[in-house]
Image (cartoon, rainbow, N blue to C red; front, side, top):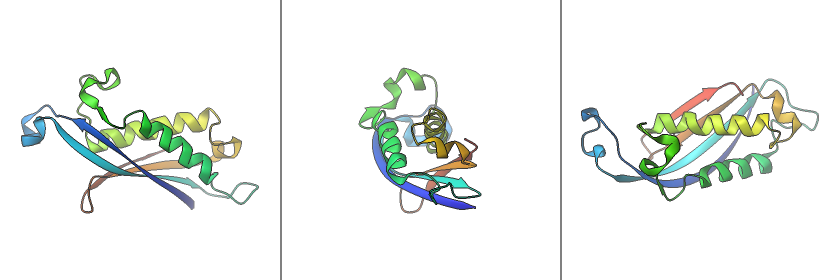
Length: 132
């Protein structure tokens, strides 16, 4: 399986509901380093997994929709605990929609999967991997 990874970051504020979250129930900030890893069994006709420039642009655009925002105020996340794992899946789904819409080129439609990892710190991260 071939892989290509692009990386970016975004900064958010949010809070969580539930005793399990302890002090994180209060409004707090997070800065995530985000890796989007694209996988496919065979390279495309140009010898690529996916166009790295297009992949980087799509990830930057998606993260820009959340950057410097309080996710508690975003209607799309109403009633959700925007945990690292939840956000990894949300970003995956948005990247997958961009692939299906052709924003990463026609060759990207042959991707097997995408894995999105949100690095919360140098010792903690969460991922979501699924088909395109």
